[in-house]
Length: 292
Image (cartoon, rainbow, N blue to C red; front, side, top):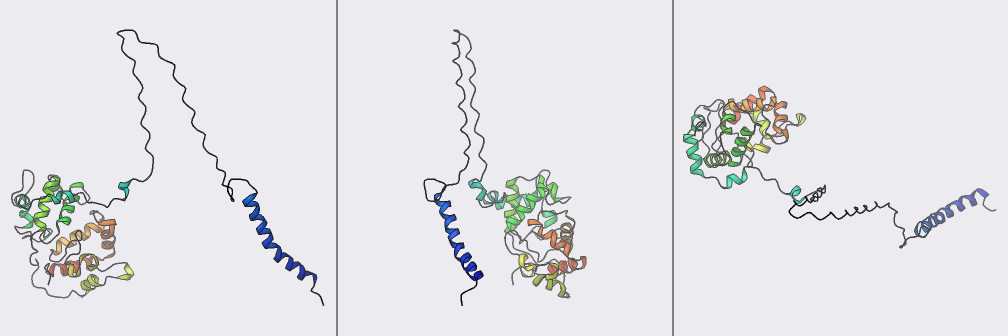
């Protein structure tokens, strides 16, 4: 018993499909001309610019007459695109000044100030540890890069303070570098707080673990365990006065301080409650800035 007609039709279609594909490919390769097996795409080329008409020869100038001005060719417009500098590594503006900085010049400026610039020791202490506490930070133990950046930021306005902004505006690049080199070389002092009374469980959890549901990473990821510092531009929090810590976190929360990298601290500060900021401030104040 032979196959039904529809079976022959189905087989014919199955066999015809590859034949049609081969025929189409053959036409694509050989049917459009060209130098190769596959014809190149025909792309309309822009017409060549017409040659500028040659100017008629100017009549000879009379003896003693001024020579006519010759039109200068316009410089070619820059070609848009990348340059080698687009891929150069970022170098902070204060880096070159720090390499030339002088510790003794920084110490002299810190102790005596200059015309229009108050001596740093009045608020930050002789050894970079503030005797006043409160809203004045300890500078000893901070890195020279961090200190230079903060003074730079006070000067350009990305970080604002009623006293420090005016002082920074009176400092040159070299003077900022001198101060940063001097304070960056001082050993960190003892905590400014009194006896540690404990009760830091919530702060320790934020320091070491963070809070995943609120997208809060552990503070130690950037500032080191117990706030002892991590990296040239990530400041040491250990031993800083609690009021200073609270003031800076509130400045980040409100957007008054905007010199954090990609807005990270502004975002984190807004996710912390005022109570948590207070707990962290007391915890870091009680920590020793020296490595144990």
